[in-house]
Image (tube, each protein chain N blue to C red):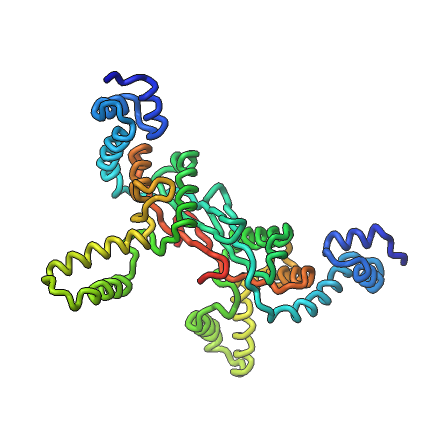
Length: 198
Length: 198
């Protein structure tokens, strides 16, 4: 199948990635745009991983007010350079993360931020459900780990399914942006106030 | 001196208080607008005090982003009715409080929110400065109380001098709004993120 200029253009617009890479991905996916996005996303992850250890001293604090002031979110997103923090697409990323937090109500940024006590409590609750089961302990432990992963997907911002595209997590949303701009990006902290709620 | 309609109008615009009360205040102040404002403010405080015990289940969450994203503030301000929370002047009050927080960097909403440990530490530091003084202990205790009051003015939002008008505290700003709308208003909580700062 022929890869047309229109297809390359659409893929570029949707991913922000260079012409040659888009063309290669489309050839690999035999012209299937969605598959090509997946291919680019995987490559992006590999590239993002290289950047993820780097210092992030710049960034921006963004906010989002929902439902005429019933919910408000403040979020600090860090990047490496002032150049990226002033970039309109970076600001849009920050806005999208703030909107996501307003809608999905995470409790922590990442699974590393979940207090040990909360994790132990959660594991205990899961284990309790299997206390009369005849499954071997190592199987139960695997189930506990799996359910803990599910718990992180519920309460940790980075593990949550992104509200605007639930095929990716917020972590993957950020990783594709890292691949695009070639700088490490980190959500440092957020606050979410819901009127009258704790 | 005659109280003109223009003077009453100006006083009304600056305080939002009814014609008759403005006229009486101007007669009392012999036409001095600034003095009349002070008179009305004192009356407003008396009126505000009546309201201050009342339940506040409505309100709004507002935000303010400063210096192109270097500082961000989120604040929840509660009132009694949906009618007030939808009011443009209430929203402006919330915005002004958020701006104040961005500039003045308070650590707590009110002096009641200062942890006991912090207060004890602060008192200890002040007492330490007088340990070689020959002042009687009861005088030193008075100085400590006075300096603690100053400490609250530094770190507590409600005690801080309002950035847009340092002749009043934020508490007084809110009290005059309570007197104006006849509803209790409370700052419930705030978050302030400064890029790269703790």
